[in-house]
Image 1 (cartoon, rainbow over the protein chains, first blue to last red):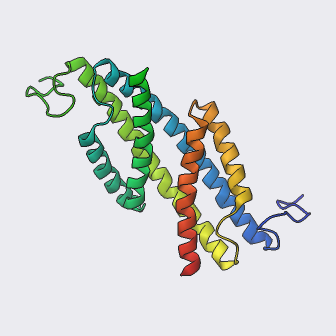
Image 2 (image 1 turned 30 degrees about the vertical axis):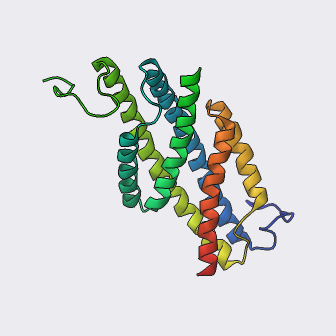
Length: 111
Length: 111
């Protein structure tokens, strides 16, 4: 019994040595664990924003809130810098999420 | 002492009643906590992908790996469905992250 398949794997890792392949596999397992955590976090985040969307629709508040978004971006850029994550990427990431949230809020407001 | 400011807050929440404002604030605090967690997760994720990028550059492997990406998308869509997150959004999210990772890998390969 070994940790490695005895037949060569197909694909781009074919021909690289076992130590490199093992390190790549280990890093990919960590990435997959992080992705699973992030997906579950985002599922909770959308549960919260759906509640915000319903509140806004019930009280005729606008779907977008530029002041809130400006504060979120500023805070996230600062958190990113502290975590050694590119603040420009953190801002792009938040804008990507907010675009989806506004799409949800508009759908709730139309419903 | 109350939980609410005695002077009215400016902005889109002005004029809505205190209970609604308190619920909105509570939801936004949860969203901010989730965002902080996600930013720190993504910082760890990029640490792992930077290591993958260096391994790939050292061993002359291509920056992108379509088989790995296809497997990641399939798995993430399944995890998303289980967490009641839109699988289409989960796939868009992973593509957004992977685009950034490939940009990093190309930069490492050029360095």
